[in-house]
Length: 259
Ligand SMILES: Nc1ncnc2c1ncn2[C@@H]1O[C@H](COP(=O)(O)OP(=O)(O)OP(=O)(O)O)[C@@H](O)[C@H]1O
Ligand SMILES: [Mg+2]
Image (cartoon, rainbow, N blue to C red; front, side, top):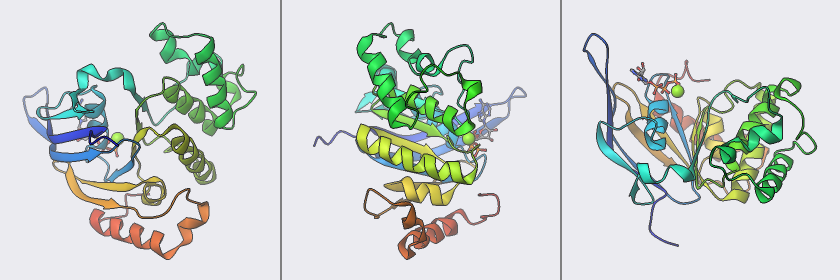
């Protein structure tokens, strides 16, 4: 295995300037690495800068201090290998599931028979076999979000950035999605950065959990989760699991606003 990190976040700071000239330092001194194939969860209070951090890693937001390297190179030269999943699925209602999944490849003029086959396989893997020609209004919220995940995976990203992808789902669908995501990730072997408000979701999915504190956003702790894979749903009831959750809650301090 090479020593090259999938992501290197080097002392990153992000400062916004409001219209009245006031400065808002949102991130400061954020420094961590993600190894190839690693699943890293990120938790923190609302407003602590998690979305800003993901946007900075994806290149949508520029760091005002420090730098982000993807496989040791500046972000600008790496955009093709990165995919992002947002809180809502944002599917195009006039395209069927297959055509929604293939959209990123059409943008790059890379849609062909092989990629269509891959899209069909991804939908199957996400439990949506036979749903290729259905439209988003015919699907449940969880199914739509799975289509959005397939769309992110269709271009074989090396890096998958997920910003509360299951935030809008009910608890049962969310559990199923966690399970599906673990399966997909174990097969695809991409590196994942996964932002969530749910500490148990973060622990269950993550190889590590990074805790972001606020004002300005910074890393409070980076905890390795030593639970073997594949993880069963029942792992959530083990003592080691609840010990991790308790430890992370203690770092966040006020747990009331964390669901
Ligand atoms: N484009 C922007 N311009 C100015 N301020 C911004 C911008 N984007 C984010 N902020 C500010 O940065 C801070 C962090 O926002 P961010 O969306 O990163 O938080 P978050 O941790 O993702 O919160 P949540 O958990 O609620 O999604 C907030 O104070 C927000 O107002
Ligand atoms: Mg956010």
